[in-house]
Length: 307
Image (cartoon, rainbow, N blue to C red; front, top):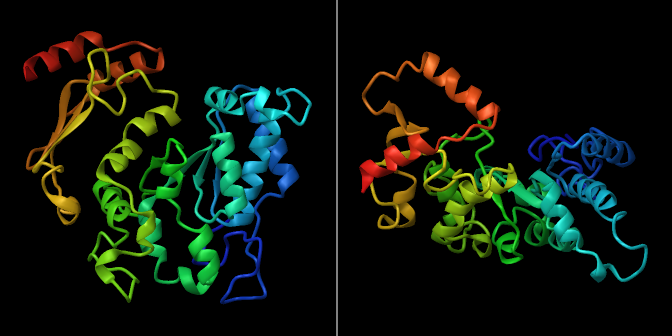
């Protein structure tokens, strides 16, 4: 946890706030201390995720990760001989929020392959004061990147940051695809309200699904196990919706309702019904998960009923 939030002037910035020029926010941990903490956990074999909102905090996070990834490479100016990306694929370092990051540090993020974990509704919540806090240039070049990260080939993870924001992934998908508020469809774009806030950072439905699905699995070392996708041998977790999200268009996404929730091939919730009492079954499932057990039989049985 490196810094605070933008709204309270707590995000740690490289330059003073535009609307409060006597402060640059607060680093909750100094740069060298952050590196020591990250290295300590990495040495123990843990994946490290760092909360960073402001551009100073994000620079500190990228630098800490880079200092861990660089040493295994040859000590020469020719870093092409060493694949930092391959090392990062093994460690999968990630930054939670990656909210304001300078252009030069964005390039470092791209070259290292560090995973940005983004909450799309932060952009649509912060748009009410983002310009005031950051000013037009910093806002346009450094803040609330999404499409830029996808275009750079990063496995962008999307989430909600619940309870700070609504938990529904469809609220996040709507915000990411339209750059408008999922609450009322509004934006702070006075020239073209329907275009959204900084529309150049909009992403597609396919990209949004990846961010809430397969990329989440990758970021948690659960790729190839049927997490974030439906496949034989996978976890058989899915939801049933009240409409086809490919047919409803951008505006229809925020009105999607969940009809059923399935976990490990068993329906655990349905609209209008009492939740299923999981009891011993649920405890047994998690014991198998924690022990590395697989659910092939359950998945095959459930998927077989869909054919």
